[in-house]
Length: 129
Image (cartoon, rainbow, N blue to C red; front, side, top):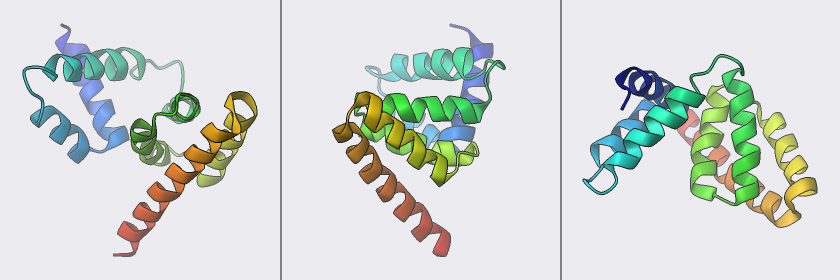
C-alpha cells in the first residue's frame, strides 16, 4: 500500500466525483469491499488519474466513451457529473456518445444518451433549487 498515492487519489476522486459521494463510499465500506475502495482510490485515482500527461478533461472524455462502450450505467452516471466538473461540455458529451454509436453500436449510444439525460435533469433540478 502506498499512502502517498492513496492521498493523491483521494483528493482527485473527491474533486471529480464529489466529496460527499466518495466519503460515503469509503465510510460504508465493509471488511469485504474495503480493499477494493483502497485499490480504486490508490491505483485508479492516484496512480493513473494523478499522472500529468493528460488533462483531467481528456481523461473524463475517455472514461465516458469507455463506460458507454462497456454499458456501465452506474459508473457512467458518476463520470458524467465528473466530466462536467472537469470542463467537458454537454455538447462534447453528445459528440462522444455519437462517436460511441459508430464504433461501439447504436444500443450503447442510446443507453448513454438516456443516462446523460437523467443526470442532466437531476443536475438542472438541483441548480434551480
